[in-house]
Image (cartoon, rainbow, N blue to C red; front, side, top):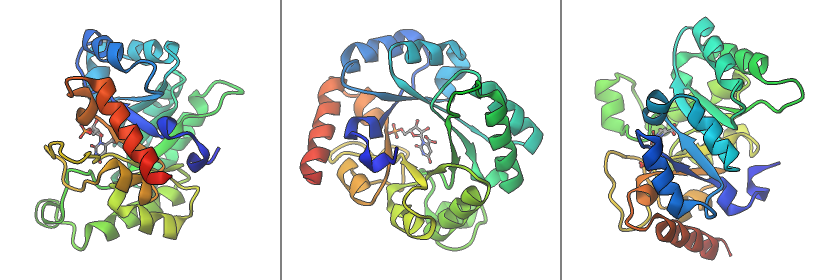
Length: 245
Ligand SMILES: O=C(O)c1cc(=O)[nH]c(=O)n1[C@@H]1O[C@H](COP(=O)(O)O)[C@@H](O)[C@H]1O
């Protein structure tokens, strides 16, 4: 199904950046029934192991496992084969690992997916949303504009046969224009008005992210660190739906 035909809530992913299952359960006490899609990153996976993926799937949630694999092709392939066996919905690798690594990741994912089941969406991370132009140019020694580098990584990702990319919402129009509407875009760096920018650099509001054409928004601390996560979540959903109508 094309992401734009999916309900808004299915396109908003909550980043469960916690280090214990107890904290996850506490957060879900507020959010359960409101959310449909969650992201499990390194912090929670390294603490609780893959059992947490199954716990969340059994609650009826879709699960994006964000481990940002970046290694030699053979290792990336094995990592994806193992991840696919958990029956999750979305996984990612760093596009900077290169086309051969991404192709190997794709192969591993197909090998690990149960017969008859759909493979998880495989997404390439372009330039982290915490990275700005100065850091990219001076620290990482990558010349040019962030948007051009992101587009280059997105083209590599598509050439490798992946389903889409992680980028900032700011780069989505050029990615969609060059690579087509069905190339999936997943965007962190979401900051509702009045929330703390923290360590993110290339940010937009949730409304802007949808307007720029993002398929899936990843939202973490603006919701999970709020006093009332469900209220924070619902105010984002309302703002987005009002903006889109
Ligand atoms: O792959 C990601 O999900 C990711 C890529 C990226 O470029 N930037 C980024 O922030 N993320 C993740 O998205 C989430 C953003 O969280 P908040 O900044 O709290 O909304 C975190 O879990 C990050 O690990």
